[in-house]
Amino acid sequence: MEEILKLNQLSETPFRKKVLSIFQKHTEAIPVSVFEKELNDYNRITLYRTLKIFIEKKIIHEIAMSGQDTHYAICKETCSSTKHEHQHIHFKCKKCETISCVSLALFPTIEVPNHKIDQLEIQATGFCANCEE
Image (cartoon, rainbow, N blue to C red):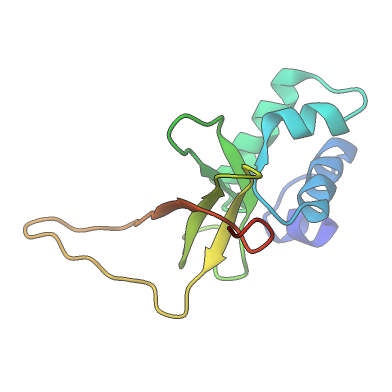
């Protein structure tokens, strides 16, 4: 945890460490309600500022799926403070309602005439491996 903060030139505050530890505990994307439940004594503004700084530093990314609260997921090693590189889809299970980042062996590329795509997000819904029907 401290290494992530050092690499991104952020102060190693107890609150930032606690937020990062919550990310490490969860394998799926996390809504704000999980942070609110797991942080004992916190200031809502401090939480949102911390999440915002982590997004700006490319430590985490936001997942905004239709009809859902915004979720947050820790970035993989391919992301850096200058560039997000997500080669995965955001998948929501219809049964357990978890949202997760799922890697693909071959991430699709899309070209749009007269446009330059610098970020591509793919969202999918269905049933996760635990809930398959």
